[in-house]
Length: 337
Image 1 (cartoon, helix red, strand yellow):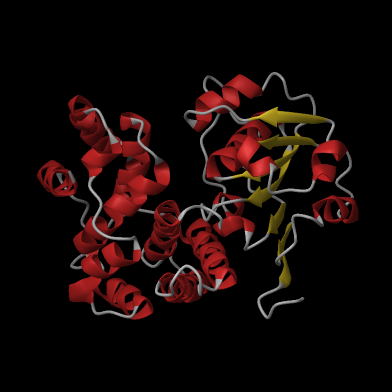
Image 2: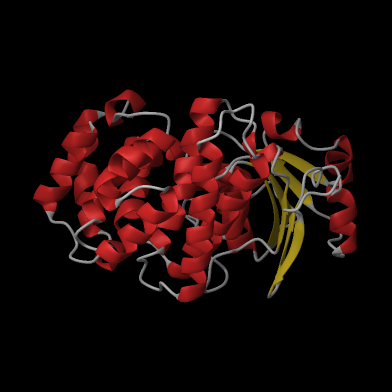
């Protein structure tokens, strides 16, 4: 049965299909888009969510190994013969496909199984030791989203994935290319995510949660990012800790740090989440399933100073109004620890 949230969105060169059951229709959607031959990147868990026909129709199926995207992409890139890729899985799988396509000059269809937002952005790294063929990174040209399949994680992990999505919408409000369209998409996405997470798991509107994540990712891709993403991306890369959980741990603290830097935007964020700016940290913690600590992600504490140096060296940190200095970042780490 069709839902009020079902849609097909044509945005320039890409098409986004959003509806329950879309994964089962993926072979037909690929045919309709004259996709031709393709290779499938996935994981055993994700492949169980799709029709067997999708795997049978692909000319090759590649299991994406664990570990950072640059390493996973480097491990697969020479085994991929056709860089027309379908990526079925979470953000790591989709980003791996994007990384390979950027080097090989290919294109990507993304079928997300989490709320990572990778299907909507050009934000990804490259295979270790390789350079992009084009002067730009890859954004999937076909996105097939099934809100049921995007929300199958257990509650704790689902809320971490949702906090990653929430971070996309939050940073889009004050990103270096912030604009009215991105802001409208972000605020609506933030409202949908918060409303869905306020519901019990049995009563939750999965379509609203998935749509909120999609809108927030679209907004981030348009507006760019600053403090929060610079911190989290670097912590993940240097400390080897999980992406969604790192975002969920740091987001309450980074948004508190942004209150005086971007007061108008943080007020808009607070309004969308149903709170006031003074309670933004506790509200985000509640939506994320409670207080999280960095040390619980099993990082190597001896590498925190290395992570701090890496954050300070990244040019994107300058996108933050009044960028934090070493002392403030160190306090941020200590409070999160």
